[in-house]
Amino acid sequence: MTEKPLVSIITPAYNAGPYLKETIGSVLAQTYANFEHIIVDDGSTDNTAEIARLFADPRVKFMSQKNSGQSAARNAAIATAKGKYIALLDADDIFYPEKLAEQVAHMESHPDCEFCYCKVHHFYHERPRDRYYFTMDHPSGYLFDKLIVSNFINPLSVMVRREVFERHGAFEPKFRWADEQYLWLKLAYKKVKFCYLDKALGACRLHPESFTNRPFYFQGSQEQCFEILELFRKSMTAEEITRYNMDELEAKTRKRIAIGKLMAGKGPFARFLHFLYILNRRRRLKKVVDW
Image 1: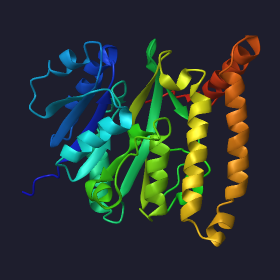
Image 2 (image 1 turned 60 degrees about the horizontal axis):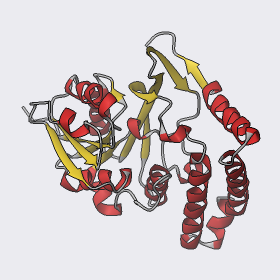
Image 3 (image 1 turned 180 degrees about the vertical axis):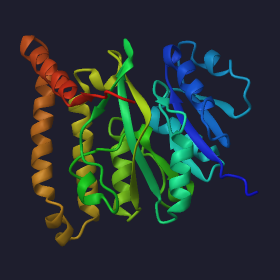
Image 4 (image 1 turned 45 degrees about the horizontal axis):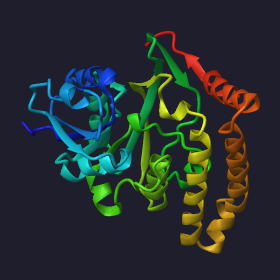
């Protein structure tokens, strides 16, 4: 009987003590057994390392580095990974039991699929039994024209052939607040084929301490998105600049940066804008009745 391919699960962890045990537990509960779970402690000051070392399963592997950011931690794990496939799992999120089995089966039966992403649920830390879903389109194929407009791929959902990273590189640490968006765009621009699996296979935790909930995040992420647009513009032909509406995208991003600066300011107006930003995100979440 042919052995199933190895999957390397990559988890960067920074002060993830309150969540990491549940995250690792969701990996060990997988119906697909041939995996390695590489956890990289990114200079935590809490008990992250202690919790990671609690697990005696030899498939759970632990690394540590000085605090260098999520992208650097992911890259360190990817550099040591031995799997045919790379799966991403942040330290406060969870896999559903069939996550690896479903995605490996899909990619093994679709050899042209280089990057597989799936549906994911969201849940509030204080209400873990309730599940929500961001309603949005999830296309398959060559997606640069769509990803340049909107980042609709959650890293929790992703499984990539390791050879893709070997050909094109992995995360870029300088884009600390938009690292995933840059990577998806880079791979899409290189004509990596994406495929969407319409099954909910994981859950993303929402909590008040989340970096993306902080007032300055929107400004910083949009500033980095603008840098990314400028970077891709330099690689494009005049025809591509027109085709992808780069001038319009850059103008819209400048407006978002301006709004972000107002939101990151002080006073009641800044707090009101931030409230509207969080409210708008929550309105996009639709409760899942059966899951």
